[in-house]
Length: 200
Image 1: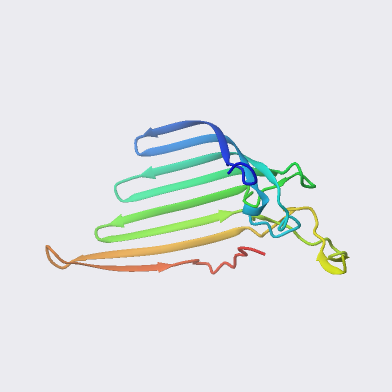
Image 2: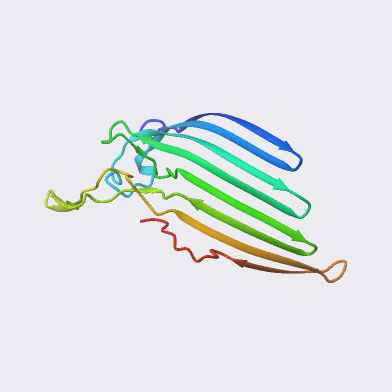
């Protein structure tokens, strides 16, 4: 209603370079985005702002690189995203801090190979850890109005460990007749059995 719940408005500017020739595709793009009208209640805070009501904005700026190469039987693509995503809530202290979605580095590599009726695919995903907030060391619990309360450190100051996952899949197609096909699919998720911390 744009009174106690604001209307979210966003603006974005971007500039890039694109190359697409001889089965090569390369794209480099920089961007800057401002989103106004967000509230603390819809950001999923799990820290000192979890029960606080405040309006604010976030800014996201970054650079994205995409590379793709195709041949008759092989396709490869990779991407890298560098991004900085920050909150600004004027009524909070501190008013500026990293967004819950401030994942600075993201990289993906993927390739597919096809030979006759066989298809193979490999995908690798990596990103740096997302931010979270720790209680204040040594003074984690304080009494407020005779109630035990968690005392938090600077919001979103800490980072989860990096995330890494590799997936592998295969597909084989049998043409049993003109109208009937049989397909066999096989996939291994998280090939290296990497243990990733998703949240804390």
